[in-house]
Every structure is written in C-alpha cells, then in structure tokens.
Length: 149
Image (cartoon, rainbow, N blue to C red; front, side):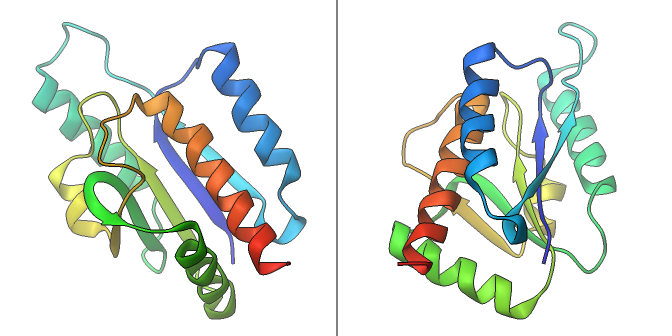
C-alpha cells in the first residue's frame, strides 16, 4: 500500500512545512506518504468556481484508476482516532493505494467529491487548507501508534 497526499497549494509557510515534515519523518517505512502539490490558480485569472474546477481536474489526473480516494471535506464523515486506526489497518491489509485529497481555499470540486470512495471530515470547523496537512499527518501517525500499541 502506498499513501499519497494530493494537496492544492504550493509554497507553504515554514511552520506548515516544519509541522508536516515532523510527522512525515516519524512515519514508518511502510506508511511513508508521498506529497503531491497542485498549484493554486493565480488570483484574478479565473472565478473561484473555475479555479476549483481547474484544481479538481489536476487532482483527478494524479489519481490512478485503482486507487482508493479519501476526500477531506467538512461535510464528510467524522472519525475518532481509534476508528481511523482501524481504517488504517484495513487499508494496509487490503494493499490498495490510498489517495488523500485536500482542496484549496474553496474546497474540492464536485468531480473530486464524486470520485471519492470516502469523504472524511477532520472537524465541523472550516480550517485553512495548509493546517489540514499537519492535522492529517498527526492523525495518521497517531493511528499508526495505536495499531502498534
């Protein structure tokens, strides 16, 4: 199983890169996550809905047909950390590659949400997309530590 994080946005603030990297280096070899960044559309070049669609198309191009897709979305299903640990174990047993999608400031396109096998909400709060990277990595690391006791 491979984990891929497909995230809209490049050139993250240093605190985001440091937080992400801290948890990334803690992950075991069998759960190393590949980060693929999709550029934001330049402001003013397209409407926010068109930008979201363009970013969605770029995200979809990075997904393989056989990948299991998990879209991070405020309207998705909430999970406890213990349930995430169970999910992570199940994903590992299945062996299917996992793509985790993080949208930009306007969220994910309808195409990305339609392609998702699961929609996951980290919180009822709307969070800035850079912060989601850190929270996601921390939760994956925590789920792994639960599975390893």
